[in-house]
Image 1: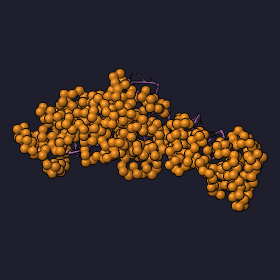
Image 2: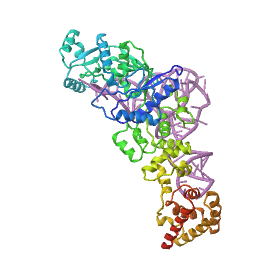
Image 3: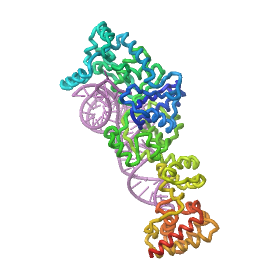
Amino acid sequence: MESTPARVRFAPSPTGHLHLGGARTALYDYLLARRTGGKFVLRIEDTDQKRYVPGAEQEIVDGLRWLGIPYDEGPDIGGPYGPYRQTERLEIYREHAKILVAKDHAYPCFCSPERLEKMRQDQQKRKESQRYDGTCRRLSPDEAARRVAAGEKHVIRFKMPEDGATTAHDLLRGDITVENTNIGDYVIVTSSGGPTYHLAAMVDDHLMNITHVIRGSEWLSTFPLHVNIVRAFGWDEPVWVHLSVFLKPSGKGKMSKRETTEAMKDGYSIFLKDMQDLGFTPEGVLNWIVLMGWGVAADDVMTLDQMVERFDLEHLNPSPAAINFAKLDHFNGTHIRLMTSEDLAGRLKPFFTRAGFGVEEAKLLRIVPLIRERLVTMDDCVPFAGWFFKETVSPDPAFLVGKNLTAAVSASVARKAYDILSALPEISLETAEPPMRRLVEDLGYSPNQVFGILRVAVTGQTVSPPLFESMEIVGKEKVLRRIQDAIQILEKMA
RNA sequence: GCCCCCAUCGUCUAGUGGCCCAGGACGGGGCCCUCUCAAGGCCCAAACAGCGAUUCGAAUUCGCUUGGGGGCACCA
């Protein structure tokens, strides 16, 4: 299978935000295409104008770009099988609908929405399965043609076989057999003349030479319908792969609006557009979603290229997967730690800027090694290192007092530290740590007690990157000034 | 109500009849390291939904039950 180049498509409808499920589908598409030396196609399924959301298509394009999974053909870049926006292909669908009617695989239906609604209610009352009752299917072709010619409002329905069953093959689930009577005559062209998904997707997949259809399992129930449509045209079927759905963290059902806002409060999102602002990296997100529905025996930290190397369609998991944001944190932090300082610094800069800090790049480059292993999300860099870019810090006096020490003692400790540090030609890990360790020993206090006072004095906070490396970056002059300020505060408290 | 799909630690998964009294990862617990916070190292607890059947042998095959999910639109 890996030997023939695959043509795979990601075909979202621009009706909302690009979310995790879509991103994973696109990722798998991309991986299969790269793995086989094939093509990854983006097709926009925008046939439903009522649900169309302006900007949604751009969000999809931006999302894929951010993730770093570029498509080879698409609406904005074109390609040999275009156009790639379904509203620009309407004539194609019309022609194909005509072919199906001519071959007696489809027929016009004049039933009103009201009649259909009543029909469904009656079916429900009689506890029957709900599907079109075939009223217009029984119209004579002549009468149907006459009414169409007369301009009567109608849709086109696909004519399912009266009896028998349809067996459709899914790569992950094997043969799926459904009685044909369980599938109604679906609308394939609406009364406004546009195609529904069932027609448009089948036509496009064929015309665009798609070899593998990878889509969500919500399509499983209409899968036999689709297979029948493809067969009615006499086309070859692609390989069908129906992915599992993502469940909310509790594992009970899909993410709802409520859970989505809930997640946002905790600093998580299922929408790609939010991920960047929340400080997640494409590497982390990719690694996270690739493993939701696909597993490796070991070494699950992977780059995109490694995923391509190892990806295997047949090992996808058909069962639903619960979203686990803790694991996203883990992969995000792991990939941050894998970055070079230059790379990370470049990505961190916008977060400092957004928080109102003017960032000197040379300085940031020195800070990055100190905070890299402390970051879970990239925006964590602000609380950890924002103080580096402040002229003065304003420590909470209460925190200035050393653990289990009085303010007076803390002041005297700080004074001694000041004397040692001020005597140094410059402050660095190498020059400052040994004498300070000796001071700790002489005093008989713990390093935690002594260094804690200095940490708060110099950084203004109780949690910070390593003390002496931080001092080195801050510079002797500023360090001494801050310790001096701290001593004054402590003396006032004493 | 009808149809379809799914079922291994709390979660994501490895496992394709003997290599499995089930491996990895996240999360949890403990220890070590340690100037805070992390990172890192070591260790621990934790699962084949149940019942039948096939087989010398089943997490792996089949059936039923139960549980979960998806769908039943002139939406995708």
